Length: 237
Image 1 (tube, one colour):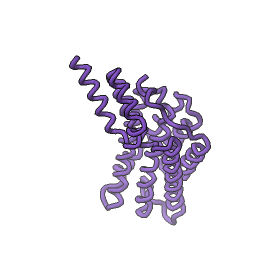
Image 2 (spheres, rainbow, N blue to C red):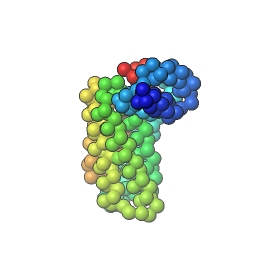
Image 3 (cartoon, rainbow, N blue to C red):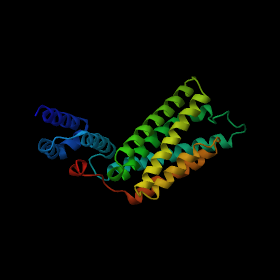
Image 4 (cartoon, rainbow, N blue to C red):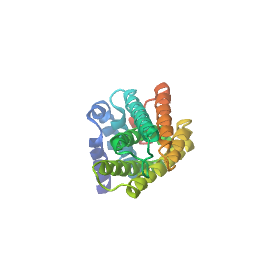
């Protein structure tokens, strides 16, 4: 009995992680489900995943897609600007290829890629389970490390190997996300994400032009094929 009460309380507590608009719309229904069937460990993970999804989406089912679409387009623009500046300069920048002037733009581009990646990850949430959760955690950790490395470098801190390692980590996580999307039949975004991550492993700023083009394409594709997220009942199946 005590364990059921604890499970029920932990599940109800997780609902506080959801945005207010979601709790107003679905909170009573979800609380009733949790009361009738206290969540196990897997269901609690689904609730955490649902909270992330709700924050990515927004009150309008289509609007969350617009957020991640906008992020993909911002990422595409940022990396196109960084690539043109680096490739078009009179002197190639030192490895790993950033100019001082492009470091802030690249940091914005990394954050935008992270938001866009969380958006496309939703395409596989109904079928990939714990594998996708691990991939998403790696994607978040890798891109946050990359963004921090770029900001530190822009402020005059360590550069070179530190920045390159952070970028490589994020790129590998991106490839993992793309492969997971392919496994979930999320075509053609899965293939595009794999290519975007692979291109980031190339030791040349010219690759950033390809990254910009790919994320712009992902954003435009989603603009045409946007779809809403899961309902509360599907989270506990």
